[in-house]
Structures are given as structure tokens and as C-alpha cells.
Image (cartoon, rainbow over all chains, first blue to last red):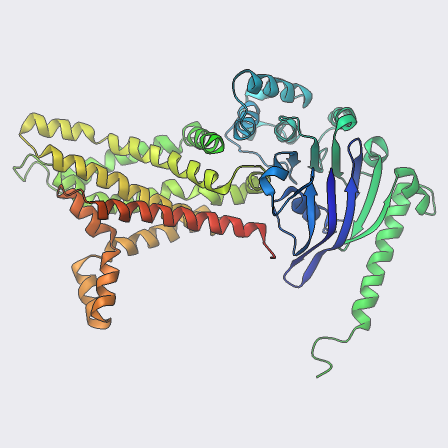
Length: 256
Length: 246
């Protein structure tokens, strides 16, 4: 359902994503782990079609995210980093806008809207302006918009960031429930989230893919046998190897 | 058309869910007649026409239309919703078109607030209603041109104030291109044909022709081209956010 094929993205001289490849099948929840600036969000943006790769390809449900963008995006529910939403709108209006833009109308629209707001547990906040909501409810409103059209693919950038423990549990349960018939990618800094909901975990640092394992397999890579230790070991090694490479290569102009 | 209508509805709601549209309408409703009465001496001319209103309309529009258009893309960039929009299957032409039509509707509503003056002129005398009608069409088209340019410049930056200033500058340039002192200056420095071509780009000359009651295909083509150009530029600029590497 989701294919990243040797994705490369540069911002100026900074190599943000370096030949990242993976696939996600229906029924899988892939946890994307990495330090800040590792390239997680950039990779997700390329998959979602809002950023074009310099080389390589991203495909959703068989459609290229750059070349056949609208077909690819019609299969996608996307929660961007920070869960942005229009502040003057209510969560209900926000979800309705997403559904209308995808061609929903009449009863189908009302039913999809009700279902999305229920699943995301927006509750009475559905009628309040998003600008007046807490961070947790804002995220739920954006999540409701992402899942409203019941897409087969979900890409969720830090879906539980800013939620309280109860809300986190609710969103995790929702992701587990939706995972049965969807391909899902989530990025997170919460290592316990990987164990709680992910069937696979990938670690990315400095734009490079360092590990692609089951949560148990990833935990085994760390000396202490937990995901946290594995994460620290992998990202430290990657950082040291890049520093070593940078210091060993001659500075630009030295050969002249 | 569905995505365009969805964006149009959302944008209209955004104007009216915040004080923006109401403030804009009140400012326009006060400023337009004030110019006509105080500066244009509407009641001192002794003629039953709306010339004093339309004399100052381009100058009013060149400040107020950028104020309406500045949020189009700058706000999306600033709040991060642009990423959400770029990841949805809404074509950019539909997003730009929906935003433009919503702003144009608000502008049309503002312009419609001056219609009581037209009714008053008919009560006071016997104005040339055909000329007033074409002047209103010209006002609407000029507002559309300014809005499209404003939307294009809103796509340049995430800062609405910068977008506003840039748009006022651009609207000012295409407005003054046809003024006599600009034409004289251009003729003195540029080859004749080039100066004439620049003068042809003037929105003011086109508006003046409509204001006098002349509705020509050329003028309609000019204003719709200006709108098309502005929106195409906006779409191109927004698309560069995808950072196409190939």
C-alpha cells in the first residue's frame, strides 16, 4: 500500500533524506522513530505528495505521489506535524470541509462526519471554534479530518503529541482498531507508543534508515534489551560515523 | 468543480466567521461615499451621475483589495494548513479559484453597498444608467484584477503585512501606468512602441473606458487576462512549495 523507493531530498546543501526505502502493507502499523531533524517528517511529506523528492519515488496504493498525485492522495489520510487546522472553524466544519473537497455530500457526508468526530472523541468540542480548544482537542479535530473519508492509508505525524495519558490511550486504541484494514505510518518520540501499537519500527537518523524491525527485534538490538537503549545506540553510532566522515574528508577547496 | 466549491464555501465562512468581512464592508461603505461627497463634491457638480464615486474607486480598491487578498496563502503558510492542503486531492487551480471567488464575492457585496447612491441619483435626476452600469462592471473587474494580483503576492510570503504591501505596490504600478505624467516620462526615456505597450497595460485606462459607458471586448479580455495571470502566478508560486526536484 505504501512504498518509499530510494527517496532522496536535499534542502540546499543539507541532505535531509538519503536513499530511504521501505514498504508498508495493509494491516501494518509502522512506527517512525528518530531524533529531531532526522528526516521523519520530510519522508512523510514526500509520501503524502506535499513535497517532491529530488530522486526516488513514493507510491500510495500503486499511484506515484508526485506523478499521479491526486489519485495517490485520494487514498490517503494525513495528519501533518503540529496538526494544523483553520482556527476560526469548528471541528465539525473542518471535517465537513475535508469531506466536501473529496466529493462527499448529503447523507454520506453527514454519516462520515458523525463517524469521524465520534472515532476521534471530539465530543462537545465539535461545535466550538478550533482557536478556543486545548491542544489535545485541536489534535483530535485534525485527526478526525484525516480519517473522515475512511482512507486505506494513514500517515500520522506525531498523532499523540500534546495529549494527556487518557487521550493518548484513546488515540492508540483507535489506531489499533483502524490497523486491521489499513496501512498506517506514525512518527513518534514516545518509545512506549511503538511497543503499544506498532507492528514494525524504523529508526532514521541524519536522513538514513538505520533499522527496520519488529518492536521486539528493535529492542534486541540494544544492549539492555529495550527499545530506548536500541534507539540511543543506533542514533549515537550514526551520528559518530557521520562526524568521522565529515572530519576525515578534506574541506572544500583544499585540493585546489 | 466540487473541490472548488468546497474551498469557496470554506473561504466565505472564514471571511464571515471572523470580523474581517464585516470590518471590510463597513470601511468600504463609509469610505466610498465619503470620497464621492467630500473629495468628489458629488452634490456640488449639479449633475445626476456617479462620476465622483467612480473617479476615486480605483484608488480605494488598490488599498482595500490587497487587504482582502493578503490572507489567501500567507495565512495558510503561517498556520501550517498549507501542508494539509497540499496533501489533499484538491487541485491547486480549485484552491486558488475558490479563494479568489470568495474574496470577489465579498468585494462585490462591498461594491453593492454603494447601490443606494445610484438609486438616489435616479430620484434626483435622470442619470445615464447604462454608463453607470458599465462603470459598476468595470469596478467589479478592476477589483477582480487587484484581488488576483493580491493573491499571487500572498503566495510569496507567510507574512500577511508583507503580502499587503507588495500587493498595494503592484496594484499601484498597473494603475498609474496609464496616467499622463507617467506616459510622458515613459515616452521621454523609452522607445515609442515600448512606452505605448506599457500604457496599454494600464488598468486605469481600461477602467476609464468602462466608466464612460464603453463596454469593449478588449477591456473584458484585459481584465480576465489580468485575473488569469494573477491566479496562474499564485498557483505556480504555491506549487514551488513542493520543492520539485525534477
